[in-house]
Length: 270
Image 1 (cartoon, rainbow, N blue to C red):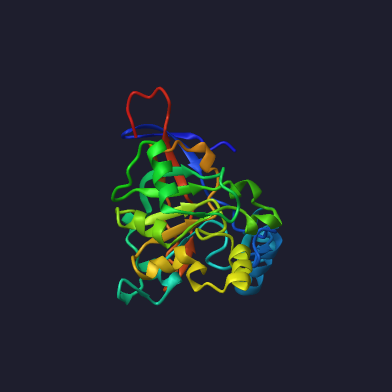
Image 2: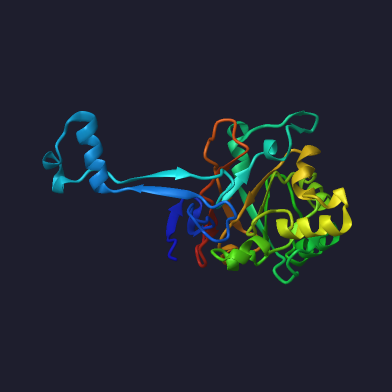
């Protein structure tokens, strides 16, 4: 897919779309439903509402549209602290419409863990090693993105089962260093839900139930899930812009995530 380039005050950048389309897909257990309004139906609506005949319209057609019924956690989306629990850091957890816009733009740090097996819980030590490999220490404002490899299975039923996830300690490690937004190309920042369910039936260990999400009760942070095209980004050097739709009192919201990658050979840096 061609994303194009733009010239910004800091230099020329390549745009990389990191978003999944909002629509029905086998990888969503509760897929969105889209009802499409045709141009003919748009013209009929104006006739019924305003008495404007189809013959008065160019080609006898009105405007097309869509009516969407979907979870705010479908496709590429941001989870607000309220999604994890009603309380975060001892006070009322904020909803998506209350989050600062500054949280959703910043340096992207891509950590490739696609070599780890599906269902793996990434420990803090592994996270530190991967960061050391790319020569980066997380700092305030960084947006850390996990490339688990699950994104390669988008559009397939098995997408729900793919990828590895973070635990409580790994999330807190990043948040305590100023990271407020953590992302993944998988269905969830936690390990795949079916894996968590199977493990519960076998071990009955409450500490293994969605530890990444529930870490948000201790420290306020957001996560962005179901990202695309992370393989097109460098480990460091890109800028991510991912403002969520302002859903009133929402636990999350859809987002069009776009990375700005400095173009090779440009003397200026974005």
